[in-house]
Image (cartoon, rainbow, N blue to C red; front, top):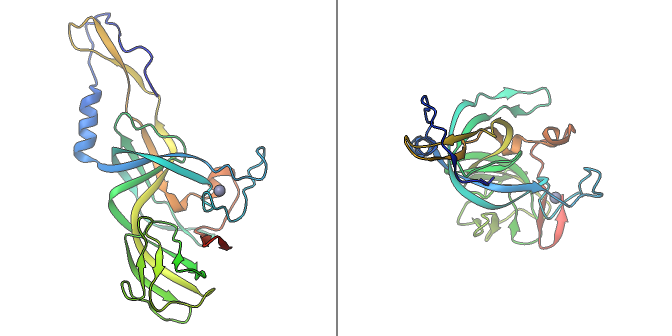
Length: 257
Ligand SMILES: [Zn+2]
């Protein structure tokens, strides 16, 4: 969003009371958290432009359905966290939603990816051992807490595997599960959300100092409901159910789902 006119005549309303957008930004910076907001767009690897049918095992978006690029740094104040877990009929835990106010200049779009830079949270997933040294994770791992294969063998960080740089996937350097063996990995990653519902957007106003001849048009800060990234499913997108948390891994140009 950009402003076409930078100033408009100040009509001198006697009762002008300014909601100072700069002060509001300061408030968010003082109490909020650092975030990265990505340019999110739909993955174009679909079968036809007029259908939503996506190619299986997509190398472009790794079946996230989104491509997230060129993040912008900003600040956000997150509140009304609904972190209690609800057990759904379909066997998944759900409902990690937050309300987030952003500083001006950070304008989101539906499903925009938002990463909190200073907080990690845990995630776990099943991975099938590939034929190279690297197995891809859904998120960049900060720290791996547990890695155990289907035979009950546990593997040790630094001895059996390390994390690649900069994507921080699993790289095997020692003992490893045989190719094709499924293992479970529990790790920390940066708390990641996607924008689900717009609460306050398109709030336009004008800001002016007493006595000045002109005022400046402003767009006020945006407020969105965010949902944990991995809980956003195709159901949210196109009313089609999909099994949660399904990860496809691709290494060495060989695809195994
Ligand atoms: Zn894709």
